[in-house]
Image 1 (cartoon, rainbow, N blue to C red):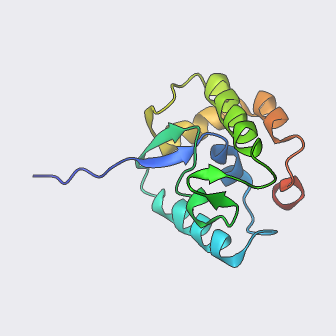
Image 2 (spheres, rainbow, N blue to C red):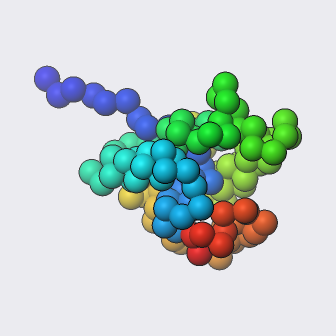
Amino acid sequence: MEKKTAAINIRAHHLLCMKYFKGKGYSPEFVSNFYKVIKSLENNPIIRITNGVDIICSACPRSKEKRCVEKDSSFEGEMTEKDNKVIRYLGIELNAGIKIKKARNLVDQNLEKLKEICEGCEWLEYCC
């Protein structure tokens, strides 16, 4: 019997981050974890698109108690709105299971309208 693996939770806006990630400007633990996550996606697993803290956030020093607390208490809401925009632009459902290759193809097909989501991101200078 084939062992079924659980889908990997990925924040919707992290699909954009993964596309351009260069490992600069972050803590060593975050960079290491991000590369580990990218490596774990090489075999085209099913991911679950979320609008909350995910496996990438797990190594972020700004992630506390399953919330992004980067600047203030409103920041998690800002990140959630970015996630929700990506979900709308890609035409997928929240918590939908999707193969990573399909998700990446959707990002590539919608890149022009997705770029506005990156505007104002403090990490922009490190990835694009």
